[in-house]
Length: 310
Ligand code: ASP
Image (cartoon, rainbow, N blue to C red):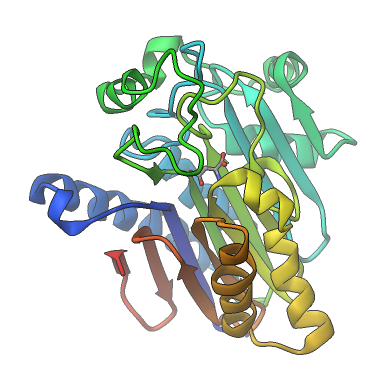
């Protein structure tokens, strides 16, 4: 029997205590606790890491506060396109979707791609047609809209600025992507990530969250990782897989490998953000180079630990 652990994130970025109304802070912490409860309950019953990351990510997608599923950010044309991926560390099976609209839970669709198709990644219309065949739940446009994300988009609408690097106009530089990584009682690990991407992105833009090896990676030999941050840089740094490589080829621990990637490699290319991860012994780590990261952790024997700021 292995130690079991669930670790989650709800995005990283310029998240400052002085800008956060107490009620909103409480709502974010509640959202993190709900997601931990949803995933941990399954681990406690002996279910798989895969089931736990799916349940935790679903819970965060359904919460309007986070930039995934309901509450996703707006692209330049006012659409809401979402990316998600999931990976099983035991089998190295993976599923991903990108640029999908109206899918209630993109992570569930990524899971279906992994389990019900012979492919790893489906995009746009093809992914939506596949979702219909699989009976995946869809919602009308209004379901995904939150006033907060709309106002955020309105600040930069009409400009060429996505909320990417050095965006001074977008004061509120947050990456609200969600994700989870877990280790189950059998020592199997899995990771999942889901996002609406970056505010005012070009429609058709795909970030790291749906890219296996960049935003998400899992391998029982090393680690399960979910990232959040400026996607273009995370793709270029192949972040999640790099953590795994540092563990496999250089013998670094999970914490050491994540520190190298987040504080050294990403920093060198101005890659703002962070990541969460577990290894197959149930060790967990949460590392970020931004002001804050919505995050939470629960291991067997312990209670929920949730935090937002540095
Ligand atoms: N990494 C995501 C993306 O680039 C954004 C985020 O983490 O919030 O699409």
